[in-house]
Image (cartoon, rainbow, N blue to C red; front, side, top):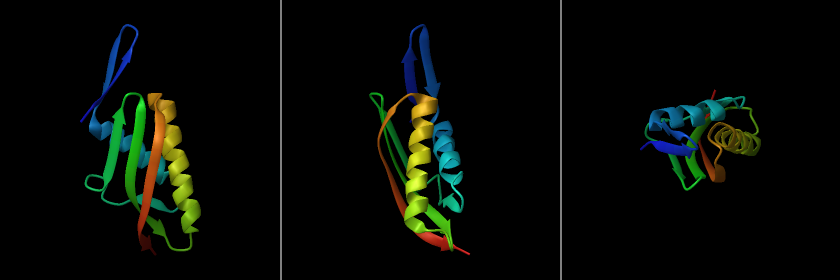
Length: 100
């Protein structure tokens, strides 16, 4: 799946792999957070100027889990808004693993 953003004077296509990289980098910019299996456990939908993301995280032991989850939600949503100009309906985060 690729995303096509239509602008005056043409269109910009964003490959699914680039979209996934954007989400992973934003999520992993949170201290102690790592996206688990991004190729299989990361869902990103963009349609009609709106986005929805589902991802699974591994979080380092000792990090406050709800804070890490909320921080990932904020950073991913901000990255999508800033870099794609889309409204973000939801960033659903599941913490699946603690890393030591």
